[in-house]
Image (cartoon, rainbow, N blue to C red; front, side, top):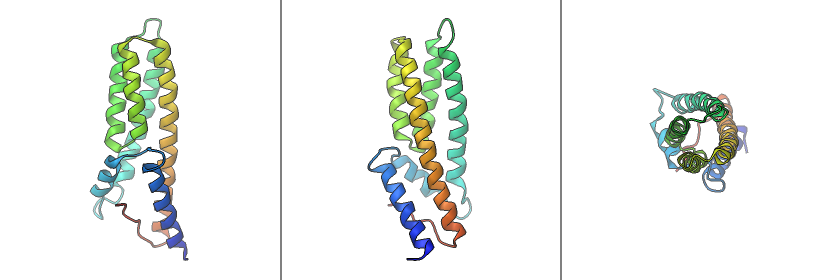
Length: 153
């Protein structure tokens, strides 16, 4: 098996595990990939990179909002709602699911719950970020080796 075939197999295996086993991604990510073409070969990487930037800001905002003497749960909820929307738009399913629980704690004005959900959110975000970075790294290697990135069904 040549290098390109090996890399393509790794890519397919990695992508499949992100959907099936772990539920990191849902079909929204597939939809993003379908929007990418020769005229815009970096589309998915660009969209996901923006998600990473936004997420980092939102996590920082959430952390500081939850450390205030008087927590503004409406503001916290607005940040979580935004996070849910952006994770949903790239298909980061587990991150989105954590946001749903987080919003319930905001409604209940449950500080301990919110702090726990923030930790969980940071954890899930870090996981999906590293999984996607691995995926993009594999894509780069395939292209560098002269192959084409397999389209997932």
